[in-house]
Structures are given as C-alpha cells and as structure tokens.
View (cartoon, rainbow, N blue to C red):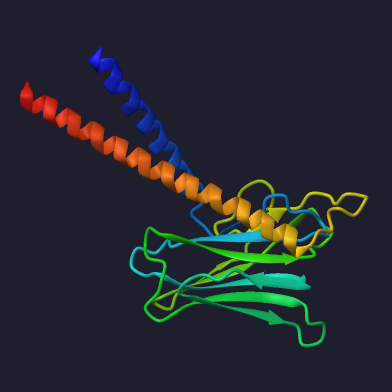
Length: 216
C-alpha cells in the first residue's frame, strides 16, 4: 500500500518535469503570443525573451513593427521602452526595451514584454523581426522566415491572425486589448503557483523517502 502511494505522486512529478522540459526546448527563442488576434483589430502582443547565453544577460530587445497606428507599452520594472514612429505618417515602426543599469535577464531566465497594438494588417500572419542584445555586446537577430517545412535557426516572432468579422466587431479598441492582457496575467500567476506546489511536493516526498530509509 505504501509503495503504491509513493509511486503515484512520483510518477506525476516526473511527467510534469518532462512536459516543462519539452516546453522549455520548444520556446528557446524570442517568440510572441497574441490570443484572439484578428485582422484589422487591436490586440495585446506578449514577447517572450529567454536568455540563451550561459555567460551574459539580456539587456535589450528591439522589435520591428509593420507600421501601426497605436503601439502602447506596458511598464516593465527595471526597463525603459521607446516607440519609434515614421516622421511622415507617424505610424509605429519599432519598439525598443532597454534594461536600466545593473539590470538584465540572466542565464536560464526569461522576460516578457507587453505591447498593446493595432489596427493589425489584413493578412493571415504577421512577423515581428527582433534583435536581442546581451550584456557582453552580442546582438542576436531573430528575423528568419519559415519556408513551411522546417523551422529556421533564428525565426522571427510570428502570430497567426484570424479573419475579421463582417459586422466589424474584429476592429476592436485598445480597451479590448487591455482586457485580454488582464486575462493573461492571472493565468501566468496560476501556472507559477502550480510550479511552486509541484516543487514543494517533490521535496516532501524526497524527505519522506530519506527518513524511511534511515529507520529501516
């Protein structure tokens, strides 16, 4: 009976660790997510930036925009955001996040940068070529396009855009985009809490096994 109870949680923890490991491998590059993004509408773009270097931290990120009327950054503690605009059209062409002195995303860590933007172009997918800057001066370009068969070594962050509704509902406002951001944040906090619970459970199981071994 005791053996069965011990193996159950241990198996679950092993499975969870495997899934998290696989997710880490799949997301080991600069990427972007925008749940519910539609052609012609506003959305919240979340750029996820992992530090791949083992010796330097990420200190900057520049993302190229396709000429957007609105581009508003979410405050990120320790970082300064700057939106570049075309001097003639005033459309947003790029956004740069720069770490404050002494701040960086260290090896084995990642950072999320959030941008409310729109209206989005009327196309099926949208790429955001990016440049990641490290504390040692290295600049990594994430700007390669996929040929549909295999993923390039350094793909540009890309989102798929759903078709807009004929009644015009897809052409939403920045208020809708902000609501999407508020929905995403609790989910991230829940996932972080789940990770802490799994870690604590694993530690408890290990301690229990050690004590039983000493008693034997």
